[in-house]
Image 1 (cartoon, one colour):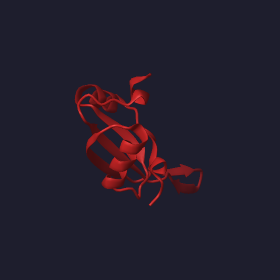
Image 2 (cartoon, rainbow, N blue to C red):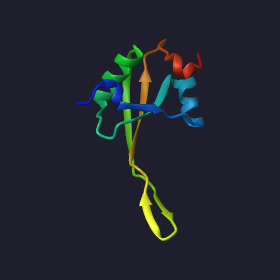
Image 3 (cartoon, one colour):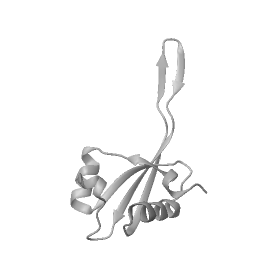
Image 4 (cartoon, rainbow, N blue to C red):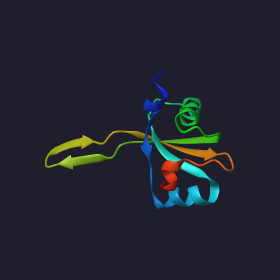
Length: 96
């Protein structure tokens, strides 16, 4: 198992994730593809010092890309939607 701060790749900021943060207290993160829900929960609780109620994950396959006659592929990635306990906030997502 990797250290907790290596499991979280970064925030995923879209219009939908911003709306979920405001209405349902959910944040969206890009995480390591090998991480499971239990590891993600522990990582978020330890790194951000918040209480996590639920973790939902989804795996995405990288898109195929072409450059002239050569074909390549972007990396696969995993998204985690974290439901925080009522009253819990992460300052990074609040803009502070």
